[in-house]
Amino acid sequence: MTTPLRLAVLGLDTRAQNLFRMFFRGPCLNQAVIVDHDNDAEAFLIDLDTQNGAKLFALQREKYPNRVIIVLSLKDQTPIGATVFVKKPAQAQSMLSAIEKTRALIKEMDTQQALQTRFKRAPEPPPPPPLETSRRRTDNKPAPAELPEPATQPADAPPAMKVVARADKEEMATHKVAMLLDEQSFKSYLGYREDIDPANPAQLASVYYDPKEFLQGHIQSACKIAFARNHPIRLETPWKSITILPEQGLVHIVADEAQIRAACGIPFRSIIGIDVDSPSQQQRVSIKPLTKSEFEEISDSPHLVRLDAFLWKIALLTSKGRIPQGLDLQQAFHLKNWPSMTRMLLPPQAMRIAGLLTQQPQTLFAAAAKLGIRQQYVFAFISAAHALGLTEQKPVVIEVEEKPEPEKPAIQAHPERKSLLKKILNRLKFF
Amino acid sequence: MSQYNKIIFTGPVGAGKTTAIASISDIPPVSTDASATDMTKERKASTTVALDYGIMNLPGGEKIHLYGTPGQERFDFMWDILTNGGIGLVLLLDNTRADPFQDLKFFIQKFREFIDATCIVIGVTQMDLSPKPVLEEYHKQMEQFGLKPPIFEVDARSKTDVSLLVQALLYAIDPVLEEK
Image 1 (cartoon, chains in turn purple, blue):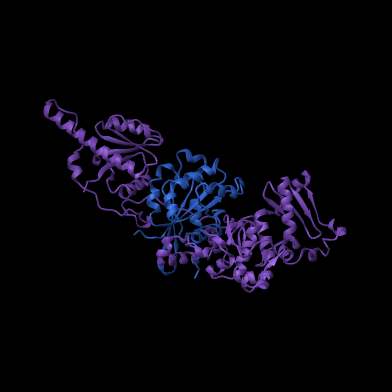
Image 2: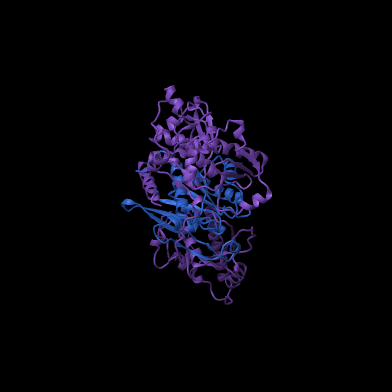
């Protein structure tokens, strides 16, 4: 086995030196070790990009003209004399190559020095450190390639660690933080629906709703107009004014959670007590562009919320676990992207549904069965995702049953890993 | 076989790796922050020059090690060591940086092998200060890599945000996972 090359590292703090120790022990296969004193070193390692890197290099070269210096730098350097260059970021392969070059240079220089000693009678400058002798001293205790835990670092070489204060764990403003509906809350707020038989037309029909009959439809129409015009607009209703700011991705509404939930749960005409289909009443529901002064009035309002989170919530609360008309439950569904779940009202099992439908299209019935959850949760999730344009439907011919599972084989192959992931999940749910 | 017990947090300087680990660690996290002496000092008064470390204690005495990668270019050789035995990658990106997509590409390319073997989630921080680019643009960028990871707006100080991000990582690995 090759004896590790002994390197003195210059210009790096203790932490960086410890990193290099780990780097040499692991990726560099123990081909080099770091020593503390120049006299114990066969070569030096200098980071040229540090503040004093160039100065240190010059000093060291002057002090030890016959010692090899491995130079680390982001910029390409032309090695001159006993210098080996390694471009940063340092990779194991380039460092191993540099170590080999250094060994070769040392050997060559040793040979030259021996020849000079043999043929010159004149006294030489002070001899270099006893390389051969110290080189025989080994410090090549094998080390595992993986990173040791900081807590178990040997006491004689502790990284200069410090305990940092815990992060400020105060929550952000309420409207920005995700709200998770557990199964009980979902049932309390949105009711309970039995799973349906996809082969039963009557049951299938019962699971649809028409967003246009609800506040959801009016808000979605207003959003379409706002985005088409790329201009803020206000939806005026006898219930509330709702202002859409497309450029900012925000909505302004003065209503608390309970008011919004109540408004979503019943047909729109029941909220405002009018017949919105009647021409005489239509004027009471209007959409108008926002004036500059109106915009300025609300631009710093505490009632501004994220538009995507708002649309998601409205759809979720309106659907109550049903599906908006126009979607075909016999087709496979695919989630184009994960929604930003840290800012959404999340129905039960939302993460699992997102994970599954992002990986592979499948019918919502298949998804519910695979996850072992109620169809109502899947329908609620898809209704909300559909409101944000995150869903697409695929022909049923590519149904999941005929395709292999895309799940990570590593997890499938290791039940103990699956068990570990479950434990982590349970731990995280405490937060 | 390496132990399968690490979650790796990575991202550019100032993206919130240290804070995110602090948010979900069961111990006061150990850090190696020191005064920045190079180009990073303009973005952050101190930067992580080695690594951050926290622990999540699990029932039965098991521990999950939370590692934050060094933020400076000099140390990316550490990343291979850190990712050995990793469960997955949490990439934090700072939306106030000049070109967050450049950061995104850099880290995806650097960790590509690890990502392909495991999974990745992306948390975008500082969106309250700089709302753009929006998350949809991040998703578009990720399409170039053929990846569709969870991408969430996060506040690294919020334990709920960081917890949800890590939960998404686990469900992206295996959606069929059940809690109990």
